[in-house]
Length: 336
Ligand SMILES: O=C(O)CCC(=O)C(=O)O
Ligand SMILES: [Fe+2]
Image (cartoon, rainbow, N blue to C red; front, side, top):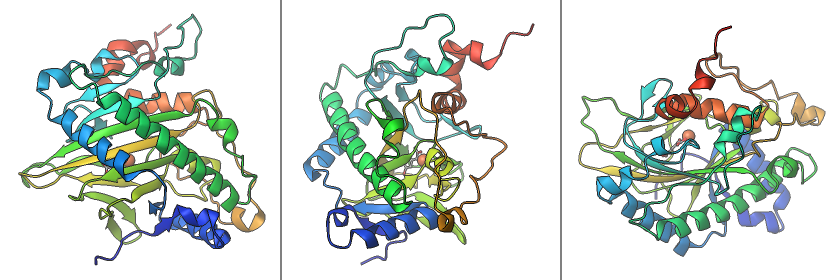
């Protein structure tokens, strides 16, 4: 058996006799590595298998069916992107992907509406694959519930009231999801499947196939997040780092493209806070506060406590074509 490169945590322990020990291990994993595998999460294996099947079927659709739901059709940043379309730190990611967010109606764009209100709106769904929608929305609902359980466990592990994160996630958390296919590449080409980055939300839960390629920045270099069947790879996003004043770590990670002739599938679920929320600063007890040295400052990517504003900034930067088509007023403020 291969040795796991990242900690493995069993969420079912939270209801058992060693709950306290589980919370310590959860806190340590999120603090020291910022990444762990989650087992015992209770999401049915049949649903996972169905979601994988539908995701693979989507990428196998004729190109015209995928292009019918291209993200450039959506001011709300939903839909399909061909490989090379999304940028990480200005460089193209070699992955094709389909983005689905919370399924909500667009907010009225009255004069003076905050720019982030443009993010809310319907998803695009391929007419050629009616089974994709129910599978992905069921996945979104299940993973939202797991992520909310984890958040309440983090609140407890940080010695906060268990409902600490309820206010910023209640009813309308910013769920987002990507099904992703990384095509193989010749070694002479760039190997950027997705460039090194932090995730912008609270928590990310990811499943992948057996190919591998996800790497996590550790103290001594990149650590492979080797696939473990049935386990989610979980990582801390920038909003949780911000709320905990840097006690919990949003760790940098990347995906290296598979070699030519192979390809990799992953499905990432990102739980964000409500777009109308402000990220609180938790009052940590002194023994934890002593180790909370502030979120890592990144001059290229300043963080905003206003969740909607923070999320919109990332979307505009990653999807410059959508930004230019629908949101050019936000890119180039009119000069007086
Ligand atoms: O595909 C993966 O394994 C990771 C994807 C990722 O990091 C992201 O989309 O933010
Ligand atoms: Fe990521």
